[in-house]
Length: 143
Image (tube, rainbow, N blue to C red):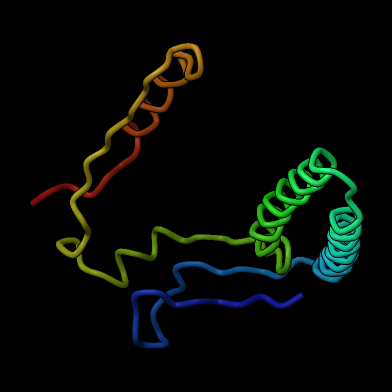
């Protein structure tokens, strides 16, 4: 397990770190699992192509084509999520070191907009808790 320190907004190596991360031990198992699933997906595509080429009428052709198309979409969705599992890390952030790296006037001005459209999907108490959490955060003062 390697601990890596990254310096973001600073060019000097003497500044304090803004975050550190540690590579987790399960990386090898995640990669083995991803390779096995990739082989299973490829074999599923081969099966779909064989069934598609062996279709005897238009109904079975469109059925196999629809299944192939849906599996391509699901495979794409699976492949895009693998980047998070390929190298899992645990990150520790140090926002208190930000003041030592930059000046107060360089902080961006911040407006917070909490959007809620459907009270059934987003309960009002959840929105209120979000708003209270945003208001309780100690933002830098505007000068």
